[in-house]
Amino acid sequence: MRWIRIKYTKWYNILKDGISKNNPIVVAVLGICSALAVTNRVENAIAMGLGVTFVVMASSMMVSLIRNFIPPKVRMVTYMVIISTFVILFQMFLEAYFPSIAKALGAYVGLIITNCIVMGRSEAFAAKNPVKYSIIDGFASGMGYMLVLVLVASVREVLAFGTFLNMNVTPDSWVNWTVMAMAPGGFFVLGLFIWGIRELIKHYETA
Amino acid sequence: MGNLIELLLASILNHNIALVYILGMCPLIAISTNVKNAKGMGLAVVFVVTITGIINWPIYALLKSTGTTNLSLLVFIITIAATVQFLEMFLERFIPKLYNAFGIFLPLITVNCVVLAVSLFFVNREYSFAETAVFSFGSAVGWMLAIILVAGIREKMKKQSDVPRGLAGKGIVFIILGILALAFIGFTGIANI
Image (cartoon, helix red, strand yellow):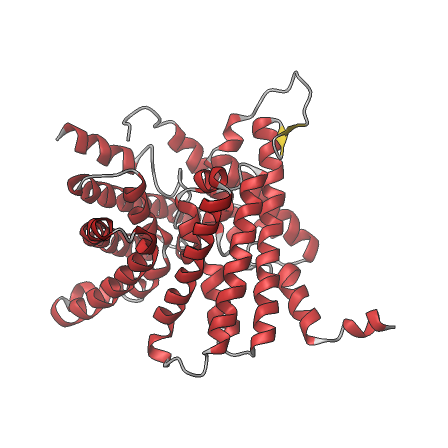
């Protein structure tokens, strides 16, 4: 009985929307740069996904807390400052505990700031809603983002290096598809992926 | 001098910031529906990226001398936002023609990751001032090249091709970008960074 009732609560719906119906990558096509640049290895994708989730949640919470004090004219700059503070935190954390991942991600960690998802959730949701829903919304968007990242990365890592999370999963006769580790592979995999998901959830654009 | 020309070629062609480093995708996908808008956005990016690159270099040197490079992200993003705002007011007041040509694209640039990426790249690669200026300009021109190519292809496709429903709109742009990126791999070896 309880599970049935949960379906109608607000936080459940926010969570569901962020992961499926309003998935930031598949439906809204936001935050593509990092989605493609870091997905040649699954571990990078997980690190990036967690980073974005943390930044979205933290900055949505902050924006939502001070939403009534921000003058509308300078709100963008305020969001920027809040977001970059959390990105710097995440960057220092990675450098301290996971130096090899920090090196692999390089400048792309800093580029979380300009990831449209973070800014988009602050502007579209956190600026108008109370703190607890903003945190859930940030979490849902971050998870939806990470899901796509990890799926794309799995395909690319297996094809490009014959490994999954650095474990060998292909037979010895496997020939690596080098192009999958480079930009074109990312574009193709994500393009086909978006196609597949959109057919599944019946979301079509009129071009 | 030869070094600088090589850097310029590399940043436009074989180290193209859009098609090799995959940056600035959101505006590239959103605004590449027709060539005219793509050109406007491209020019605005060239303008802003070159100027912010040149401004951020001395600022980073200052941060380095005071040992506060941890803050570089925060400082860069504020510089970029301030520069864009200032440029907007300056152009509106003194060169209204250019201001009208850029239109809504100027404020949008603050969230274009190319601008921030160029600043982060020159830090990572330890460029000198001259190299930074050339690299910023070259990267921006490379981005403009990419958005205009994509817009041209999309314009033609709209009239002539039958795209599957699920790929229509933004999905097909990834396939176009993938093919373009494959083509740009062909430039490998022209110049090195």
